[in-house]
Image 1: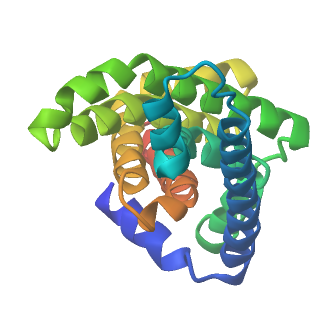
Image 2: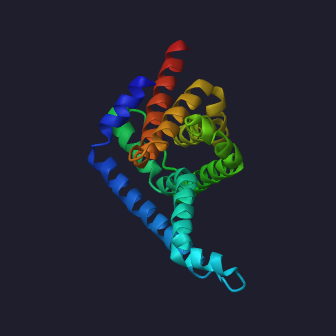
Length: 233
């Protein structure tokens, strides 16, 4: 796992990976800019008619803007992992191909197609979004511990993300049913990839490269596991 992480990080500077990263960042930032605009617009249209005078004054004095900022930050924190995962799904095949061409040129898989990529990425994004939404009360309760929300975030999201990345790589090389079963058959690999990727998602700035790192690590792990299994036969 450590070797896969190092190889993936080193390849971030390759031209094909940089191009995908730039496109994904632009789309992700645009989506969050639209989200922030929607939040500020929505709060700006809140009707204060009938509110107590002191509450109206408090709202007009900046409480409304503060509420918009806090809500935007909360939605960004909760939604970044799922949105970035969905966005990266558009170019995930390119990432896997770039790793395979550099390190595993003899193991060429078949293209998944845009529809399949988006279906798999969308499923993972929805799974992550639901997990974080359901765990929101637990995140709030654990705030007093300081590190509790971070640990819970990594554990919960690690499970979902690891499955997504391993399955996406496996789908290029084995039958669909087998690719869906691959993460379950390699649980420690799935958890390891997921934990590392979720850990990156939890850190400012590094969260920008998290989905790329997850896809690249999964590619290395998948091919190395297949090589080991082939040697064992």
